[in-house]
Image (tube, rainbow, N blue to C red; front, side):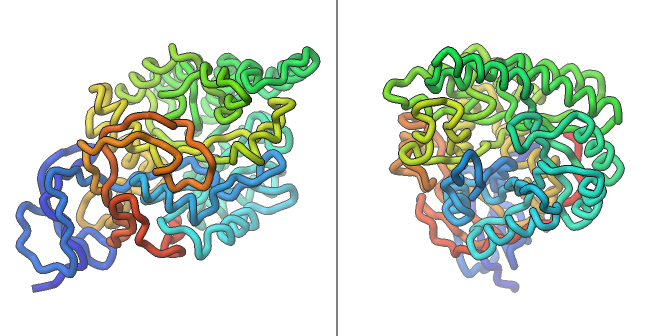
Length: 462
């Protein structure tokens, strides 16, 4: 009888469709056998009695080792992927940001150099296009063929944003070659005007970052991007949607039958504009774009996830140290690097405040954190499910384990967490990547550089 590499026994297997008790046998990094009370030899047996066995989490919105605002995000591909794995995420898709004058292939190569020898879990790359002419648009077809089917365009930020004609050309190109455009949707001109107004009035505190980026500025840009996608009948993915006003634009288009999809993030479900009022410049910890919104948005976004109106929960993990990076903007909110950490706590937060409050089913939880991300970004069915032949990326998740989130228990390379003090029920106790146990009881036991680059396929509309 064949000896398997790993047998995970007696777990409660949860996918986007089913929940049942089963054993999973793994060979050569793949799921080889699923069944109840498997009596097979294995080199290692992991007992998952009383615990969920989930498909590894997939975070499709991360910014590791990314230059921004005169500094660089503080997690590189080593610390960032160790933190991800510690939280039950086994695949990320990071954003490779095009520098001025770079081709898209050169952009990807720059990010491969950042990841090589460091990533502990598998990764893909979105190409963020910031310096675009017709030659670059034509190159998109080559990149899709090479396994980079998704592209990001910014509708705001000096030096990063593109105009509507460029956005429409990229939508046409991805439609023709089975790719996907995602957008950071905020109205540049509204934000620019308000920032200058606040600056002239001497209003420099972190809360004015949020006030300079109102919900309608996000909704307008979201609606405009959707209309451009409608004009050419191309799919579109809206990143980090934060508010009801923008959600309404997505829902309207989906109800009309257009292939529009969107993600939100834990910070928009659990934090609020009230955090900007924290004293002694602590509000800078929450400066991100889009900014945190009023608490009135929380139930709206949770229900949108439950009802399939939003398709993915990602993190937009973009950490900067409070001391030495965020405080660059102590005299003016416009100088605060935009972004916050979050790659590690995603599954526990969603389980606690979604499943634990009966807003999300277990199946929906898996769908939002693993299966849909895999489908939308060309990783399915190798990833995003538990099935024979799929990659053995699994999480043993204890639904009863209670912890209090703090900087001290996390592995992110940053001096704070926005979720400090949050109590969670449900926590990963083991993370398996390609059949190897790489995290056990919050201790990383894998090897740097074991994560592989994944060439991704065409998106599946969900």
